[in-house]
Length: 203
Image (tube, rainbow, N blue to C red):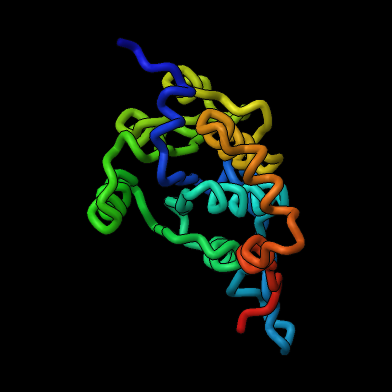
């Protein structure tokens, strides 16, 4: 029997995201750091933009019983800080071959491939997308990636695509409305503790 995307979504326990082009719009900004004496810059600071909708989506995912993480080829302080801000359970940077990280997560968490969802946008994501239980492509993904996805988000990366993927899974599980209600329930302290970001606070 061929499984639908919703069938696959019901099994998911862990949702993993690429970063550039998925949790961001794919743009990477570099600011030269000029020395105090005015000599030419030898270092740069990297900037990325993230969607607050995706951040709130991470809270919904946790309320729905899922764990979340990122697997990215680049190494960036921005990713480390944003992941810490959202209390991501899994953060893997510098991953040229992303299935290595997936296998590590499987071993640590005792989950199967069928219980993992992955959200990607480019061909580097295909090896993982071909193996996991639910492969999600963002709206701005390369066509080769969309062709192999079980679900394509209505929004682009950096514009709420991560939230789309999370809500699709929670809706398939039949708990989306329940998770939303819990996230805005003043008597429930859990949502606030999950995603109150500290922004530039590095402590």
